[in-house]
Image (cartoon, rainbow, N blue to C red; front, side, top):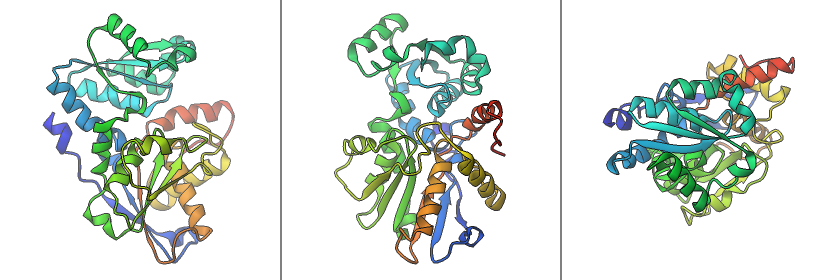
Length: 308
């Protein structure tokens, strides 16, 4: 467990050459959190770090959690369970996926890591935080350590606080992709009052604000859904082209669900002069690269260009 908790925590922060994107007057840095661990990368590593420690201390042998068909969280929990000898159970949204799990790269990976996948209806999935529903799961599977969808809880936020170090104190802006809001909550907690934390929602709406305020009273943050491309898991030709162009120019791959949208949004805001002139901007690559394979399969079926 100590190997998991500490051995992978040094990752590079790279400066992006904005002149390659016809932008000047700013400094942009990207922290490669995607390199933290081969399979438990980015913010998933941060969120699981203290939760797995707590599960071990509480003598739990099983971890149960929730997720959708291409969930980074499901893949990460499955991989961590395999590495540290936890039995893992994934409650998956969508009964129709039960017969197609082997066709889905994320679910197939989770299964190969030993995760027990349980497929339930979307209606029942909405009850994932209901205590009565959780009780039925305990009656069925026995005792388990419960992780919410996306992995966000107090211990997850604590882990995400550690993304920021003293090195980033000179940056006026902290940028991150936003799903459930846990990563951003940790960043807001760890930021200084002089810094502005910008969240780029991968979903329609900025409902994550209420989640963030559960963990911190700071208000030096802002969330935009202007670059969600229509909602969770949705992309278009502009985003595909941008991700491929970004990789060609920087040698850094971006995922299409989270970090790709964030970087697209940052570049657009830079062009619009949203940031103070000559400011230093720090962005976090939160991982999720495992989702590229599944997205490319969707794109091929639609006869669209793929993510290189």
